[in-house]
Amino acid sequence: MNAPKAKPETPSRNDVWRMFDRIAHRYDLLNHLLSLGQDILWRRMVARRLARTGGRHVLDIATGTGDQLLAMCNRMPEIETAIGVDRSPQMLANGAPKIHGHPDADKMALVLGDALELPVRSQSICLATITFGIRNVAETARGLSEIARVLRPGGQAVILEFSLPANRLLRRLYLFYFRNILPKIGGLISGDSYAYQYLNETVETFPYGAAFGKLMTDNGFSSVTATPLTFGVATVYQGVK
Image (cartoon, rainbow, N blue to C red; front, side, top):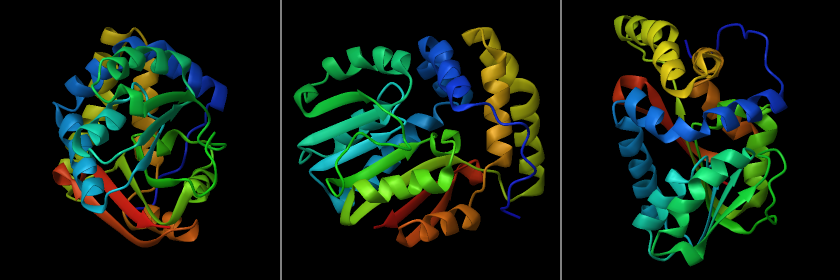
C-alpha cells in the first residue's frame, strides 16, 4: 500500500547535489509549471499550519531558493530568525536576491549545509520544515533524527513531500505523467532530463503515508499526522518533538 517499490541504483550524495546545481537556474519555474501552481499553494498551507503554532526561530531544510522560508516569514510576523539550509551552492545563490529583496531580509539567512549535519545548535529551533527535500536525504532516519536534535522540546516539524494517489486510476495517470511527460518537459526547460527522471524514481520508491509517519515516530517525533493533498499527489506530515 504505502511501502515503496524496489529502489533503483541510488546516485551518490555528491551526484544529487551537483544535479541540483545544474537545474537551479530553472528550478522555481519548473516547480510552478509541473505542479500547475500547486507547489505555491502547498507551501502557503504549510506556513498557515505553522502560524497556528507560532515560533520565533524557524528552520527550512533543503530550502532550495528559499520559497518555503519566504512563505513562513510572510505569514508569521513574530519570527525573529529564519534560517534556510541547502547543500547546493547554486540554489542558494539563486535564492539570495529573493531574500535580500524581502522586507524582513534582516531576519533571514541562507546557509550552505547538509541535512545530515545541520549547522544549527541543538534545541535552538521552534519550528522546522522540509519541502520536497526529505526524499533526497541519503539517510532518511538520520535526517529525521537530525531535525529532532535541533528542535526544542515541544517544537514541531512539518514535512511536505510527493506521494502517490490511493485511487488506482489516478495513480496510473499520475505515474504515466511522471514517467513519460515530466522528464521531457523538465529536460527541455532545464537542459537536464536525468534530473527529472531521478525525481520520478524517488517519488515512486520513497515511503509515504503511514510508512513515513512511522519513520517520524521512530526517530524522535510524537503526535504524527499525515494529510494527503490534491488527491494524494503530495502529503504533509506534522510531528512534535
